[in-house]
Image (cartoon, rainbow, N blue to C red; front, side, top):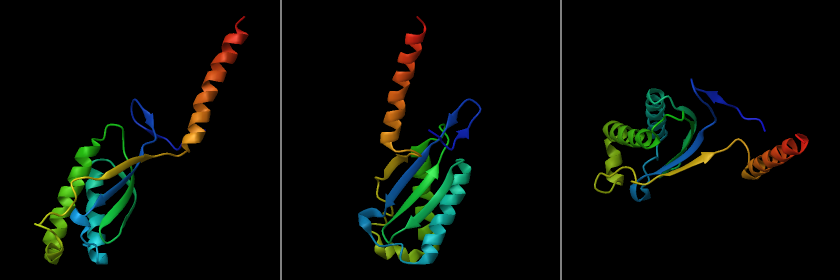
Length: 144
């Protein structure tokens, strides 16, 4: 099994994530390419501070998807909350007209979807783990 790995001073890892964040009540805010461009720019700026590598961001009218890589030391809830806070503030400040789409000036839904993504399928990983048992069994049989 071959992974594309990142390295820290005491770790080797491959941590990729898929984040989906919706506008509160699925209001259609991302109707302009300029608003989406500001969203992407702010996320990239925040990500640099948290040492997060953004792989891709795309938005529909009421939510966005982001693929990113992070270090094991990254505080993901803090990172995501920072993304939500700053992007909400900056979009409303730069494009005050979006406030008419919002309910009580609430921008983001309080919940989000976050999943890890892998470089191999779960089935491949299960087979690899099962092979470890076979290797141990072969090693104990040859010691006699």
